[in-house]
Image (cartoon, rainbow, N blue to C red):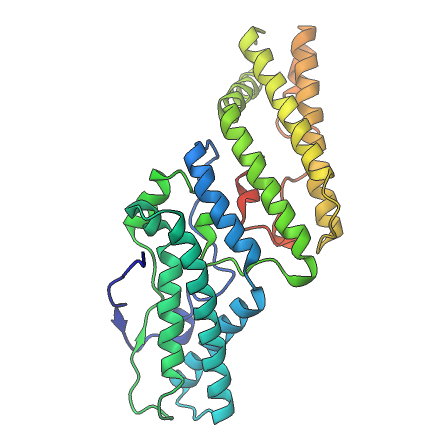
Amino acid sequence: MRRQHSALAIAGGAMLTALLVGCGSASAPGPSTPPGRSPVSNEYAAVCTEVLNERDPDVFNAAESALVEVLAAAMGGDSPNESDLLGWSEDLENGVAQFLAELETLEDADDSAAWLEVVSPLQLRVERYQMFADLAGETWPLDSYEHTAPPQPGDEYTAALVELDLAGRDCESLAAEPGPPPKHHDFVATVAMTCAAIVERRGELDYESFADVNFDLVVQVLEDEPIDVDDQATDALEALRAEWATTASDLESINASPPDPAAWEAAQKYAAEKEAVYAKRLDALGSGDPAQISEAFAPGSGTSAGWNWEPLGLSLRDCRSIQA
């Protein structure tokens, strides 16, 4: 079932830089929500992860570049040579073909209104690529030029992400993520799937509720309030420690070559540090010593700066939803 959208709004006379907003492959999705996922959302997310892992970034990036070239030539009143026009049109048509194949996979997964809304940004990108491919076939220089503003998903899209619990998942990046670079495809695809498993496991664990208990203890220490060491506190800290131990093990088990070895080492180190922090806090609670508890729960104690997925090619993938 193919999702149909209304014609894109027509606008004219804007600056080139304004026109390019929303066109680039680096355009990030909107704000994400913390993980706490349902089995149904995980099934949807798995389809998106598969699509992004199989996407050809060379096709994606070439289409994005061709779109910019056509737009710049039209706005500048240039007369591109036939070779350029043919090349731009071909790159855009290749982008259309790739996205249409992906849409078929995605739409085969479900035909509910909410799901079709979640994948709608990909359809909007298809329409935009086709529009500029057609524009490349016009007579140059153009006597008049009307351009379409970069399409932006509306409130229905945001509501669908919330309804299906897919904010922060790979499905939110369908129109923005180029795909794993060929040289490091195995690494990016493997880590992306590992991050998805971590996010899903934490949703089943109700990680967020345990993190809230830890946060409350940190606040009590900051405000010099006495801490009552009870089963809720110790159970929460043990759950956090165990989850970070598993997360560290998950990341350490990946042997593929990363695009940035230092960034990957830092990500693995951070997970191990978080386990150590919660182990230290758990020991402090067991000691009952106010000074030891205060020292263990000092904000930021024992950890480095946190996750940095961008140099690893994972900033738009599920990895961004692993709570730090």
